[in-house]
Image (tube, rainbow, N blue to C red; front, side):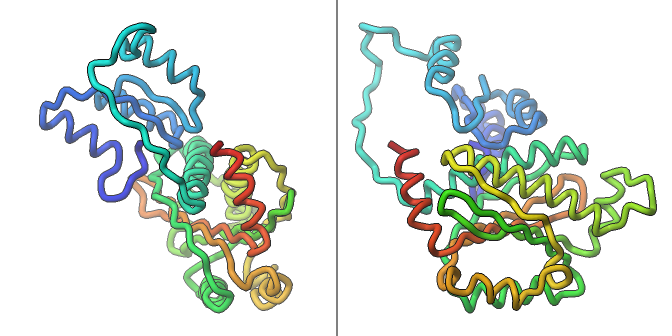
Length: 278
């Protein structure tokens, strides 16, 4: 894998090379940026498969590399298999991991940069914690937060993309803004629409649902925080929150994506993920 805590996949490949270890490595990752694929092959990986991978594609890759045991042959080593239960948090984190990788590939193409991906944080927030987080995002003079609602197949929530004011000029330069008529807020709304839309579309595709998405709005300006919480209060007693912090390599730019799923959505998500894992 590429996106891992402590050491990421690139660092593992570099360490294998530095220590002269003759491991045969295939990378399977949700980070599908062209530059990610190029980098791992340069670091010695034999192949790259994107998540979620197809079983036939994996078999074909192993066969081409001479790593697949032929029928009738006994593998040199056998390993006992155990049925390990996969928790909802782990399954959902992996689903989000694939989604943010696909969104990063889009952003990388739009901005012409390499996007560094984190391990997503998945937590259950109480309504008070959510209220505080939204208030902080909406009231800070140093932050601009874009929110966009989504709903479909019994799953609903809000996506928030948070930009730091000091980075907006750098983002405008990367997007090669030509006209002064194209304001900072319009630029951020467009970028948010691409990033949030790509994440939600990938999650929806993986769990086989269709999301209807609202128009992106500026939190605290076009969308009042109190109103957002009041409308969703009965659904947000407990909120499934996913936190993702994107950063752009070679630039002091980071934007944070927060996906908030209503408490009512958790049961439906659990059903969908259970089906996906079986």
